Image 1: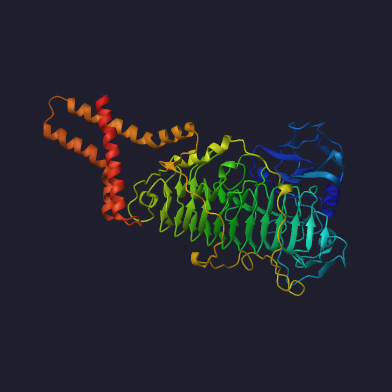
Image 2: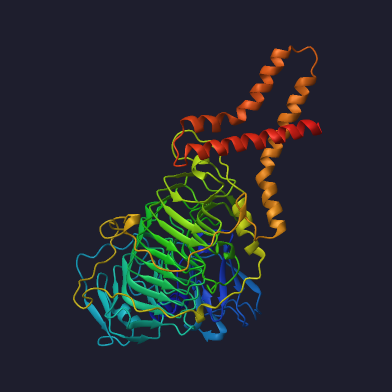
Length: 637
């Protein structure tokens, strides 16, 4: 009973964070909690009975982990140290760091073991557990009716609204009341401030249908606004800036909408939807700048749309990706359309590690994703690639496949407007794009969406690996999220005082409808244009000699292997005694012609925006290169 009571106290005081974490949701043998100065991340972790939990001190100060009832403790953990404990019985196990808190106060957390309800003011909460309220609840005003936002949230009823007057509120708010609306009266003047000490601005834990709108969250150690494990969520007219992980974040949640919002200064991504399939969610009309990534969608897809938004001055723009550390692998089935993605090469982008440094200078990156549709976007002025498909090497190797890149305008990219890196699992295609450069060259000829495909089993170039690879080992500075530019004022919500609440009811209110704007309707922003880098076979000449040799080797190696095999086979055929000359000639002709049957047929009958004269030059060039390798192989033999 003491554990349950302590957990209730923690929740009522609004000190707990999200549930479940990426590691917990993955249901690996071990689940992880990171001790950061001075919070536990995640502060609530759900695990199965018998599952081990490991705490890792990733901060710069010493910490420890002590059960509220002192039934177990870690001892002092210096930076880099860890501690593991296994929980066999279902229940809630709160704990604290004795250096930076005490039970229920300061640096605290809890482990929730088994499928037990999360304790809180509303009792049993969880995805799909809460009935939709029949009508609107009462309005609780801050500070008129309650001194703090957390106090107002705890007093509110499902379907009700917390209406917050302008002011700076230095608190972290935990929400377990379903179908609640938290609304500021002034988007730019109603500010939740973490002071670079509190963990999260607003965290919604397993409570369905919660809406956050018309306010600002800033300077939190982790996230600005965060939903975890919910059915139904919405963020409208929200500003989140200079937060230490994500700006607006939905994890392992379904049926959501993020709209008319702004995110900047995040060392991971400004907007994030992850760990869900299907997600049934929309990001519409948002602006992301000065983040490491504008959008990161790890293992997210299934009726998920990223539309009609602007992604500028981040290290990289839109980055759906696959990672083994989160559930619902692989990333797949996302629509990216009607977006303006430009000038994403922000050198002072905040980052916690160099893990995503290779993404720098790219517009849209599909990393290890499948069956995504990227269409009708304007992508311009990136020093590396405009739109690129590339595998994701993690615990498993995740190639791309089935992605459709069509009807985009991509221009003024330093290395290539369009690119695909091999290996792939096949089915990636490019069609109808307005682009001047690509890697490999003639990308729409080699990877068409209709008709004959010269690379039915996959393919892809080595050049993107070498163009991005040098940044893996580069001496990349790690700018701090606390020193990013402040957010400029953003448009406020119409009639916040009188507009009725609109809970995020799945299917009825979220994800909701959207219309994709055409490329010609996008208003182009003035700015410096990127100068095209000189390249050789798609590889920038500014890279190191080692990277260039590696890239050329990988690019040419398939030609070399196949040509050598043909040369040896032909030479062996010529030297066979007793075979009629016409028989040998027919086999030699067949061996030579088969590799060119596909390109020649496509040149004659295929559909492509590439002019026929250019296609002829490319085809003849490929034949000449191939025959040169065959001749060289026969001479060596």
